[in-house]
Image 1 (cartoon, helix red, strand yellow):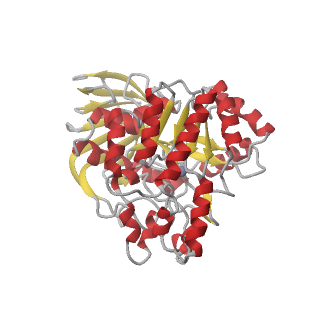
Image 2 (cartoon, protein in one colour; image 1 turned 135 degrees about the horizontal axis):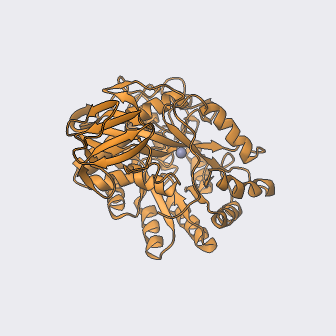
Image 3 (cartoon, protein in one colour; image 1 turned 45 degrees about the horizontal axis):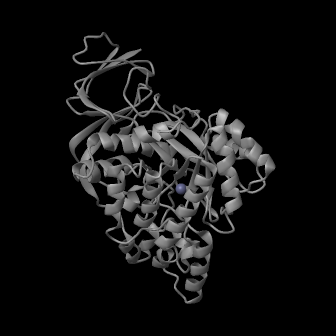
Length: 460
Ligand SMILES: [Zn+2]
């Protein structure tokens, strides 16, 4: 089956051009201006932009946390992804202590199998390292799982010690893997948290105050030091703080292979949100927490200059009613996380491109191309080129949007960006040549999304 998409402005990380896109089955087979190719299906893009499908390399669907499970599963989460122009996600399979990494992956494959609306892959989060687990790392890299996450925070739950960090960096680095880290100093946070609870400081704001920027900056610096010692490439997830960004910038100037992502919440929200009345601050309880107003401009400039390479969502949704409210009298009982999978692309477009902070090509790089390159999905994904998957988004830069929980596709009872508006709406979304989202409606089928093996790390 051949599909021809005509009259679009094709935008990639490196160029913007008028080109018609000819698709055969799942792949792009030709790109040319004024194509006269015969096709079974002709689609008129009407002069709108055509983007490569966005890639969200940081999601948590159907993830257990703090005695509950995230509100979005692999079906609702990937439909919301499609609605927002994201055609591939990389979720985290988290090892429970005592489990092998292979068992953790089996658990997560079972959650996702036959239920995803878009393509997906998995990182492996290591929480319990021993020699057997270490021995699993090189073969997993070969099998399509080249990325391993470690937590420097969540003491007593996910947190690993420095020896584990160093050992995983060494093993993974030699075998073509990339180590990802949640960089916050869990011991510092543990002390501050206990102090606050003892003083009766239990409201959501104290979640942020118990996790100061210094705890992040210290962990980022420690992780970079260990990456440097081992020579391994390393990636910091959800970087939130200007000071931590400074450490990354300094490491990159020295030529180290350090990469980092930030997330929309750190670009659009700030610590003031924790004071929302009626326990509304709980919506924003996530780690790292929202930072002081003004911090976001440092992150935008990090994106512009290339010290931050990726914007991912860290989508981790919990309902305000029935989940977040478990922590009404104690902020440590509020499940950490917030939704963002559906709105990431349009927020970065609105704030970045329309806000005059980044070019449209840089925008594509941040939400699609750089994630594809860093995470072993390029060039099948992350660009529009002959031979690439026909994962495409027809995007109307002039249409207005307003974000609301009343209209979003995410299966969660609030949206942290409620009332945010701007211009830029995904009109149609194609996943491997198939139209799956059309004018506000999901028209695909859960189960069409395929598991994607990813290649070993090969730089940017
Ligand atoms: Zn996360």
